[in-house]
Length: 104
Image 1 (cartoon, rainbow, N blue to C red):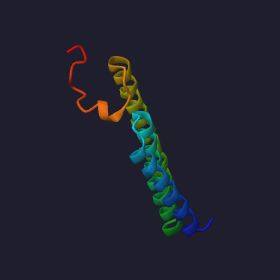
Image 2 (cartoon, one colour):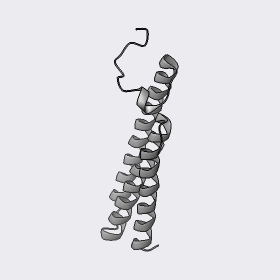
Image 3 (cartoon, one colour):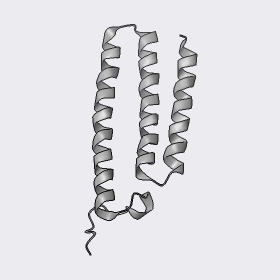
Image 4 (cartoon, rainbow, N blue to C red):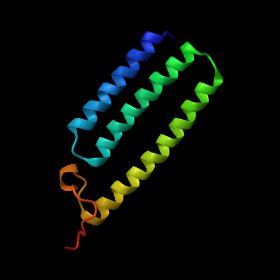
């Protein structure tokens, strides 16, 4: 496993995530694109850390960041499901104000 190959894979993941986040209108798909982008950044950072300073602390930090990202995305999906249940819509252009009461 060489560093340039890992960085190319991370860049490809980031580009796919960016395309997914910018081209979709469904909230869940936008969040999936953002998750891909964050995973690409974590992959690149972990690879750089492994090749520059081969120490276990960098790998532990990557695992902690992945766990935090998992919790963050789970909370985001919960908010998206709640908004879909209350408003009946999951499109980004219809969710401009989350504080607005849907009964009005």
